[in-house]
Image 1 (cartoon, one colour):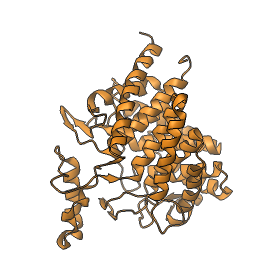
Image 2: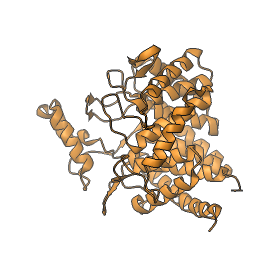
Image 3: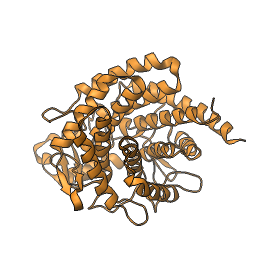
Image 4: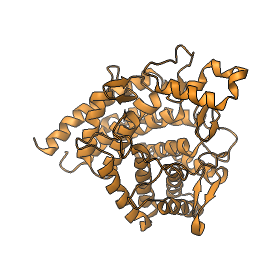
Length: 397
């Protein structure tokens, strides 16, 4: 069977999975459970449990990792996460490209999503920004509900950028421009050598997370491309230089300055953000780092059968977000064969009959809770990106 025939078959599989995921997302009104929502239980509002950080962290991990969904027992409700809305918006933008006949319908849905994002901006900051709708505990401390982070804001801004690019929604572009003010004015900077710096994870954090800072860098490059002031591009360049300086000889990047772990999807975030920054800024200083990072990523994060590994030295678990970001990253670098193989594995091993996607597969056991942000919305976004890439591939028409 020729490669283009395999991609045609994959596109049929992808479109069926996309239709199912879209129907599921819309039937849930983009509300769902999240791996980190365990502290939303009324139990953790009790006086004795509100301030017990290690107990709260452990309970959060227990709820996250349980093979059973404990949320009903703990009275945890489904919530609207702005990141889920952003991923849905990104999917609408890509699907409009695949099916021009559906453009008006996608524009209408995209407009509603942009309005929802405008309504869920975290108040009290210099620009538009977003966080998660629940309290959660990181390894470095608590993050209260609604606290904006550069990760959530950067992901959402990227979706808004694509909504403007593919759907022509100027209100989406205005939110990107406004979000740049949050990055510039509200995030602290961890200083590096020769004027470089890393954005902190949130306004109150001191954590220097490399993939997170690049989401801020990409956002500033996008805002500059929309007409933002020149200072934005210089800040983007200085923060990108910080990340390039911390690339390892192997081509890998650690998660943060304090955490040496190297996992699939965070590496994919780095590569995707660097590529977008380079395209918008025309700054070629990252070329060699991108090439080394891509060779490391492609050779170390996939099995011979092109199933995504979670870490560079460990295969399991098969994770929905890792699969989704792998599809996006492989598409970004033109590896449609690899992206198609990952999509097939994700659909077959994590896809559910109702159109949602399970969280993880560990050996023969599937953690089947369909987390809306982590699993279904990310896979919807990724499969829409793959579908658009297949349509745009030479010889596809």
